[in-house]
Length: 327
Image 1 (tube, rainbow, N blue to C red):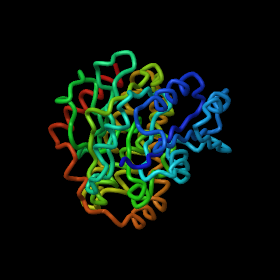
Image 2 (image 1 turned 180 degrees about the horizontal axis):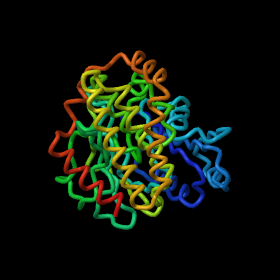
Image 3 (image 1 turned 90 degrees about the horizontal axis):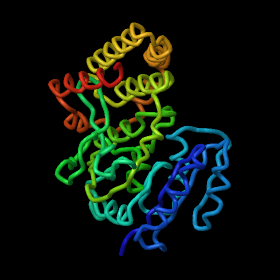
Image 4 (image 1 turned 90 degrees about the vertical axis):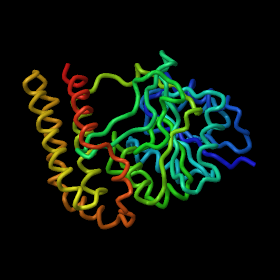
């Protein structure tokens, strides 16, 4: 018998996309009596709530303000009745077998803590948007994607699950502390993957669990993106890494972000440069927060380090990211 699963869809001003997402989840072949769908609305200012209310079998949780990705999803997980919780992006469209295939990758496998779907581009269903993500020894991370989809192109184990569609046992999610609410946007899934590995669980990709992600929703990377991205990458290293790795990794990551800020300035993007520098500064003005998080985390086994990309791969990634961000 299949287990009870709660699908959590966090939404903010998603009136244009949420119907497609919910229709596709409802249309899966997973037994309806074993499926719970929860929409958590982060105080949308459009008519998202009215759209969601049309779905009679969907639980709606309305928040009093926009709490961001981590806190919003945590609240959904706290309300979930399922043995397993799935976190799904509001701009996703899933296939009929998406959930059935996703549960196969984790159900009855106590060594697996998280499993993610393969996300394909909505407008190019033969190309991978994301199949989990990586982290490197230099503190550089990113999604595994932008390649043609075949099952052979999908890795088995990844450093972190793609945040657009992943599943966890609810007890494991609670054990590792859920998503860190100091991450308002970006890198939350990276941090979650790090802690999952260090707690003794594997993170896998399910090559047959397919969903589609709307490319047009990604938008242009605003200056504020670089604040959250920089701050959260450095915070992840500072609180999760073993001390002997944290110090050199922080040094290399800070150096990379300083170079990034310099390039932005030269390219005539002063706002991008300033937000990157603000992200670096955040770490050094919140050392007390970092120290308390390091002290509270009791599963720092170092197992996540074994999943990191090495120096050669790191340099190759930096080269590709440089051409992508500064072209």
